[in-house]
Image 1: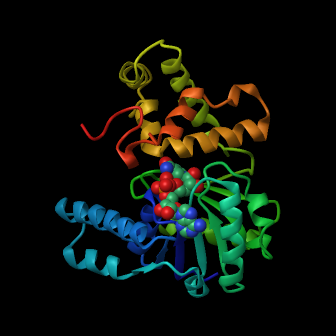
Image 2 (image 1 turned 90 degrees about the vertical axis):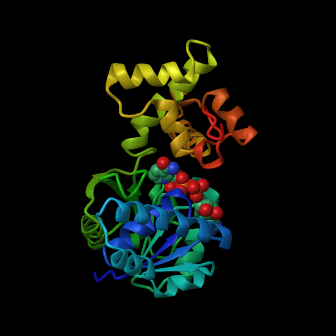
Length: 284
Ligand code: NAI
């Protein structure tokens, strides 16, 4: 399959990164969001990242301009009609994702692959919303996308080998390492990571220790590059809560119950670094 043009749906922290790495590898990219301001923010994020690379001497100004010229802003989903591959990176909510996949199925050409960057939701259920379940697949990038090597690739029940191979090759062309995992809640990455983050939040909730000290224990004691609460703020506490709910619903086991403090922070709008407040205050 010849993939040249992609559409990234959702221009948030993940969408911007996904658009950047594709443009950097020569693909043409539509960066799409419902709001124009979000598309602008996403493009700003890409520009900032590329500027940092030019400052470090890894990229010339000319290369930076070329990469940026390959990213086209979009607020019309109909632009998907020009895409060979769509990568969805909107909010981690099944109802919203299903709606977008239904619309993408209508707009995208028959040969196009529809991929989701979901952290935890079942690919098979998303695929069932479309008339092309064999062309729907999970393509789960890690945050920050330009830095992290891993892409989890998740087949839905009907995903074809041809589509799997095309997505695997695309990930490799981005200098990423694809790993195939099965379609189970949270796949591998978040099934293991998120309960640890949730447990760290319980540790704050039960007054065992402060966020700073918990992060310090995990960094110095376990050699993690980043403490779990810093990581939770970085991922987004809204996304963490959605993932825990998916694990809880999917496995029905109490060990996946989201901590009430996580719910409280999300209700307060303290959803992490992207808004300046989570377990830490980024505005101070
Ligand atoms: P975010 O909150 O930064 O961005 C989401 C974007 O989607 C926003 O710009 C929003 O305006 C847009 N959006 C919402 N509904 C839309 C619609 N119907 N059509 C078009 N755009 C729409 O979220 P983030 O962190 O980028 O996460 C996006 C997805 O990536 C989620 O599924 C999440 O689980 C997954 N993910 C997140 C990671 C993280 O560390 N934050 C890591 C890997 C995957």
